Image (cartoon, rainbow, N blue to C red; front, side, top):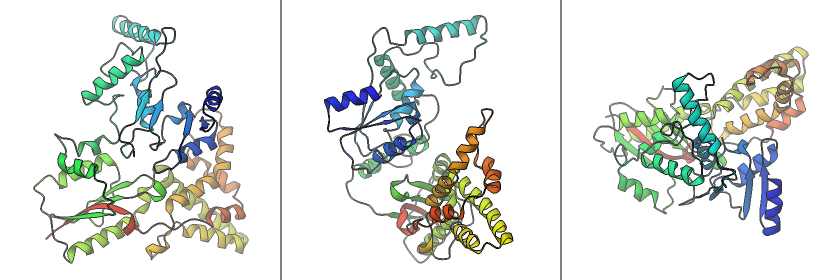
Length: 410
């Protein structure tokens, strides 16, 4: 990739090129920022290793060039999926495939899959292949050329199948606007989809036997939006897309009757928004939820230590950090919990890497695995102060709700 980078600079000196691999954390973060939704950067290229093929949203990019031929469709889906997102600002994206010569095409892979299938069926195989290595529907033969790979993808897409045999996480959402099994009429979806009007927020009240709420909450700092459903005012929020889609189908299955915005409606909206604030941590990714829990446990230990040592400065610093986890009485005083979790993860990064280098066997390292390390080797007071002295306040929840459906009982 470094060689390709130099060739690009020779051919197009005005183009900025970033090489991003698993070994270059700073470049990985830079690509994620510059190619994120809403970025205004132009004339940029990112040369990425397979370390960048999962877990990133780079939807501001408009094209993907595959430098090598993916061995299986699952890998192709992962790479293209970084750019091909539901909220892409581009009407179309381009995917460029390598046209390998006979020497480099995957004939050997095809023969291997065929031989493995034959041996397994006739003699029984001692070599189990990983699940989903070969997508369902093309068992026994792997694609050989770019044309065959593209043909396979098109066939699966026309058949309504997912590329790698595993359901897309957004499939339940797409199904809500499906022309046959959707609950949103096609003409309504097309009208909204192609509308250029700027909608700040929409709230719909529907007549229901019980009070419930669906909220689409905009992400902070261009982050991904969150869906949330509350089955009643005391319920724990449902945040998984597939569960929310299923509940919406149940609650909107019968003939829907709109309800006027009377005194009951606005009060219910406020009640559900307050309930959302009480359970705001559930909107965070699981790792950040866990980070906040570990932060609470470790800071509690630090506070007891500081009180036993009568270290007044450290007591004040730790208590200030703990306040970031409390639910304030006023919404305007709420810290951005996402930023709090990020600050804690940055604060413990050094301890994390030390523990990572000491592992004697391959085993996933969890946040709770370094809890004892953080207790026996406490983080300096100055570092805690620096980490939490510039946490931004969260935007009020009323301003972040972009869409809502509220079930209002009579």
